[in-house]
Image 1 (cartoon, rainbow, N blue to C red):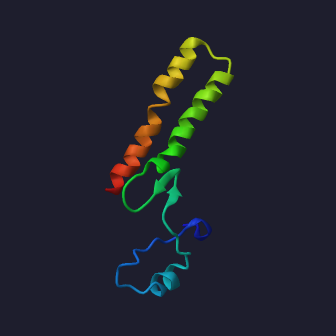
Image 2: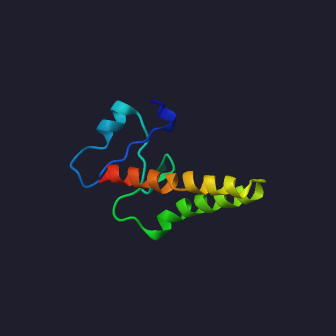
Length: 98
């Protein structure tokens, strides 16, 4: 594992000394909310604000496809096969958390 890219997230309500994992792993302590592979990590319920990056990413893809010189069929193919993968990725990530 890359120590420069790693963090440890601890539940502060548990009875554990923070120094123990810090001394063993030598990773910094992270705070929530954070992002992992483009998906927000959080404690609690998913809020509307947490979904904005997802919606922005979909809008950016649509705008970039309009800028390219694509045939009508080419745009339909991109919309049909690429856009559905984005919510699927998020749903898989959130499904594995719960």
